[in-house]
Length: 305
Image (cartoon, rainbow, N blue to C red; front, side, top):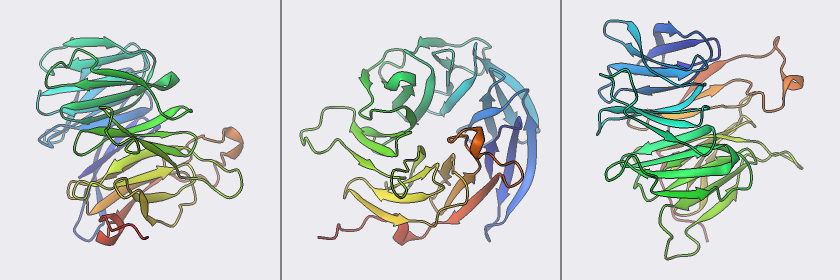
């Protein structure tokens, strides 16, 4: 199954069949737009949160929903930490909060330097990006309540998304200025190991936001999606684009691989990156696409000389 949150206050769940057909299973409602979701480690529950400042836990077996956490402003990002049996949430109230779901109060509240915009977990590495380009890195194994490292984003423009490396040695940062940074937690011995590259650029001076980045669970390569409606597959180790896919008719705000990497799900929906002038309600559509991932799109290959 996969779930999706949306600006119509809904959390929806589908079951994907072997033939790729998605069967709608159920939905739940918030009081305001829902900005993020996370699966419980055992796949039995979905956590969702957004502009009503609440985290709700949806038990798929009983189809019951209950509030389990709250912030003082909208909740932008969250992740379930299976190793600690805890939920971590980041909000526009400039806090990062850890929750033991048996207690109504946060186990720990960490003050962020600014509003939370991005968050990525690959235990024990947790990377949080905020407004004003701050990035805070945590080691959840040794000191979850302390910042391991604080840095300013290597990109010059607003952080849109962050993705922790599969091997936990670093992270990718995507910005609104059509650029991705490959950055390591520790200063690498090779000065070229940290680098940035341009992507999601159009003809002439058209520059689009990098809205989401997802690592492939088997191959360690990654997909980027952007406001240009394009999605691409990349290999950071050989520094090359593996495949450029046919662009969608509207921006792609988010993407995610399934557990074995055989499907890439991505949403196609206007993201307000060009303001109200580009919003056409008559032609605007909101849909989710499932791409059957081919091995040659995501498997690393030697760089052409």
